[in-house]
Image 1 (cartoon, helix red, strand yellow):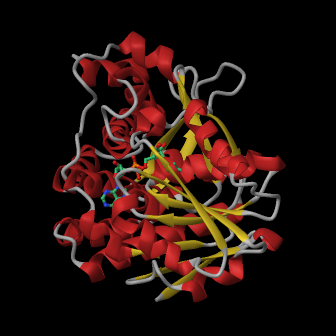
Image 2: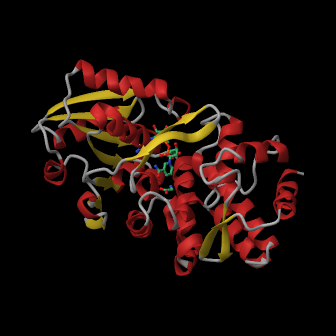
Length: 359
Ligand code: NAD
Ligand code: GLY
């Protein structure tokens, strides 16, 4: 097992990464302050892993809430089901919520923990590649609104993150690919040598090779932990983690939540950001082609849905959380392996990118 750390002063926490960790009480017991635990999961993950996770919390009074599965249920209405379960079972302020599932469960459980009785503890047990490399680390929690993705939420850090890579053996191939979009992101924004490693190893990851997967997860979590440690509340460098997300969130909102997987939308959105970066002269056409080849090898889309229009993109991108005082800011590649968040680009260049992808 590898242990990484997210260093945030008194809110620092460990990330445990390894195989066969789910039922291990020694990992989680030190991170539960009270006597009560509520495991939140969904109807797909519960039959696979809930009983095993319950054994890790056998020393506590443990309840569970099983939510419907899907991005379309990442709403305030579904959040109420968590509060119903907590109140019916008389959970008090020292309870600990446990998020068992992908990013949807992690984001909702974390947000429920941020709100319940003005804030209780929570533990992340992510079971998709995307949640293991990204969403379980860093404390961004929340739900979607019909008019914008992840628009209602809070920063609330978990007490620990337990990543059992064995859970990926049951994950559908398309979900593994979706997680790869966020793995590729770390290379593109921060780590050029990791791009070279990914070019050699994407096929092994897609074949579920445990050692290759473990390395990709460790590398991704250590980059994320480093960035979150520098900028917990996203006033600076953390925004770079949103490469491709402004375009991607527009795709997810326009297509209806769940119809494009988050990772698929991020892949197409990253290609749009790469295209715009090349139009500004910051990366070369060859580097755009290299980026595209990585997403293709990962089994991901490289363009938005043909049904979308430039006007729709612009209107949806205007509700992005990076918009400041009406100014659209985008994360763009200043080089392959480095990124900036900027509003300093001509609108004509953005129009050309939109026309290129939407013609
Ligand atoms: P998801 O949570 O919808 O999970 C994908 C599917 O896999 C679901 O059907 C789920 O039930 C199923 N599943 C989960 N684990 C499984 C397993 N081990 N075996 C079989 N099936 C399994 O999707 P996701 O890609 O994990 O997360 C996407 C969400 O994460 C989006 O809502 C996105 O906005 C959010 N996100 C948040 C952050 C953050 O920093 N908080 C970062 C990135 C993404
Ligand atoms: N996924 C972006 C972030 O955590 O900041």
